[in-house]
Image (cartoon, rainbow, N blue to C red; front, side):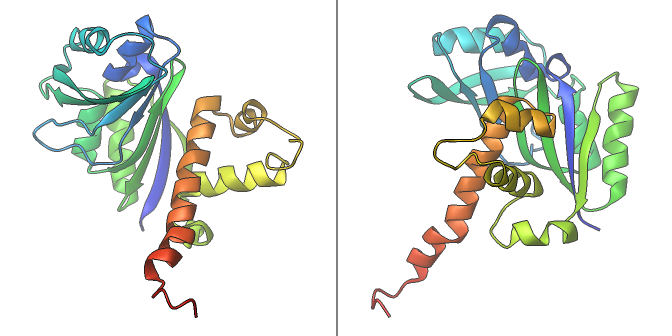
Length: 225
């Protein structure tokens, strides 16, 4: 049975977490692409940057897990990067590759990383957990749902976490005027960081609009009927 699993990992247990040592206020968001056997890390955004791209690259390339880090694009205080991994250095990436999990999202702050995976069967999740345990990686399973349980959310292209975040924000009055709550309070209710909750809302908005308004406009024949 296909399953969605969410794990949290301490920031220092994933090589990209080194960036938080010098820049604790940034947030890292990995694009949803499966890492390849050539060691290409999916593109990742670093948000809230207040230093040069070279400073970011130098901070990351001191980590032995990277062969190279390249800045692909920069927009105001955020940059898009791409890294080539050194696969001889074992770690979380090796665990993902060996277990065959599909990476759906990964967001990191100075507190922790939150990874969301899709697994074809429970053995993949067990293999990931065992690898992490054997290599002293503190991977904590925080959510586990079958795709069948997520049927309501998938109708609009939402993951279980996005569906949960949007519903919680709505029910708690986040969209009321004036607002009855804030992102910090909502994040605390789910036991995650404020940036992680904000990211779920942002991704949820995008998927919801893409499967409703945008999809409707793209299929409209222009007749107005």
